[in-house]
Length: 373
Image (cartoon, rainbow, N blue to C red; front, side):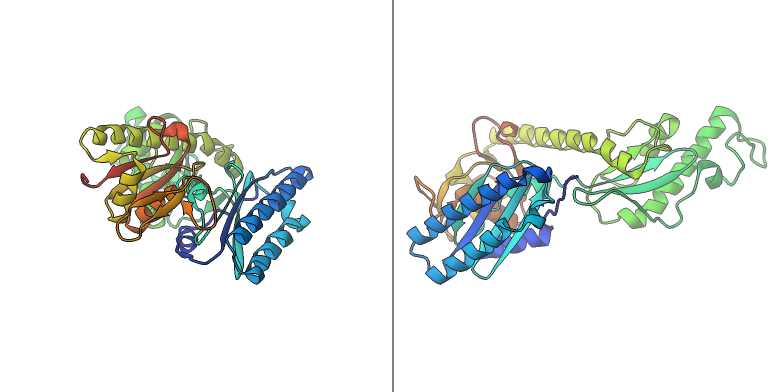
């Protein structure tokens, strides 16, 4: 089992606002197999030593350096903590405190020391959250299941949700006639199934209103075709779970939702890559780091795709966005890609953490602009 605790959006934004003389960001490859946790503990100790060396090389206060190292070493020695892990661990430490997050996606081991945290690797967990609702719909039953990256799947209580198609039609079965005798046969069943679907959609509105996470339909036969025609939630995915949900547990529905979400994320990334290529020809997209930094500083980036495993040491001017590149990492610099992502986010732009293979060409980032620069 994966033990995952992904930062919330507010936690991520709070991490992005931190400024301190010594901000240490560490990413460690971990394993949910507790018997193999020792390797990750050793890796954290090694990366802690690298962070200490960078702080000392930058003449950082010795007592504050010791405070950071002590927190990291305490974590590395906590065997109970290491017994419950996922595929990566992100740790953020200053002399005054430490936060850590267990992540489902596998990240490249890394250590960054600067006056701010290195957050780009976290972006994939934030932008592709592996969270969704599954609507398990059949003629005999209906339930809404919440699927989360860090918690077991659970059924959601929905007021006024009909128990079945027959119950929604207030009849013993779908083959019975209406009082007028006009509702019968396949056509009559379709009418009643559509009425049933509309009642389900109406019951879901208060629960889904204001949400932005995907809704996945698990249904077969006519209901699988009918429900999308009456659905009012804009984030219903086109791809469905085609197995009958009646005999599927919440956990089984969650497992079936994963490949649907993966396909959705892949399709979304492909569409953005296509949009980038179209906007590039119009002068409204760039993969040039200096241009992207300037655009991010002035709020000109609408959508940014950035390689979660790439770093480029340097400094971005707070006023002009001009980039000063550095050949090596150190406590006096930070990742330029990370800072471009942070500024894009702070100006209301959308930021997606992706793999390099998802980007157009051999680039570390791709920016779709609100206007030409």
